[in-house]
Image (cartoon, rainbow, N blue to C red; front, side):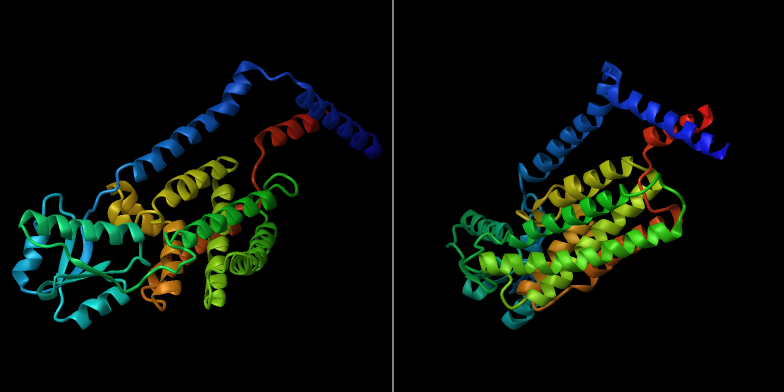
Length: 352
């Protein structure tokens, strides 16, 4: 009797699966499948063009060595391009650059502007243009520019950390998604969720180390910082993967689309890669630092060029996302729910 029931259930399941597999796509089904693709396409276009089409200076932090009235004058420039902060000396101003408190420093009596292209090349260029325009408006000479944190010759635009972060974010969410497809439909099994998180942790370490070594050996980047960048890569991959696992556990397959929107489409545009956040529009400028891509870019640049200055905040952001995802995954289960598969199997069981 039991054998007949199992056989009948298998036949029913096979019939349902065959029916689903052989069914011709209806216009409604095609629409339902393509609608998310349309939404992602439109959001992608809006986010990247919106973030990058017209970079403008907005309160770029800069230290000023000179009379207090000069700082007030710079803060009153049309469009509010600068956030001028008083510095007591050149040494004080340069230490603010080293500590990543400011993007540049202006020494009034020498008419000299110190920039840090390693922090962001576009911002260094923007500061030079801003001070030259202000000088020209008063009939003064152009500033003398000194780059105190130059970019390496093999990365003149400073985009290597940004594109590495994109790869690490992709590795995390795609690994989490693929692991989530293993096994039966989602349950509330803590053991399954823990196994998924454990697999992601192991993958993050291996992928982080191998990616950094690959880039170092192939393109001579990350010289002298392989260990630090490997740790950052592993943390970024795990934060991306664990957050993906938690979001997918909470809302099912739609979680994958939400992760792509938040981390890839919005997060990468707001990360401060080609343009630092003070050059981005308000929305992207506001959220960039609290999303994993922006935190990871900040962390990588600090490790590469600023001796680890201001790393606590980015680390907390990445750890926070990793912890949130882990808690959600452990509480809600370890696999993406496939509603079609679940309903088909339920119907097959009911038919026996």
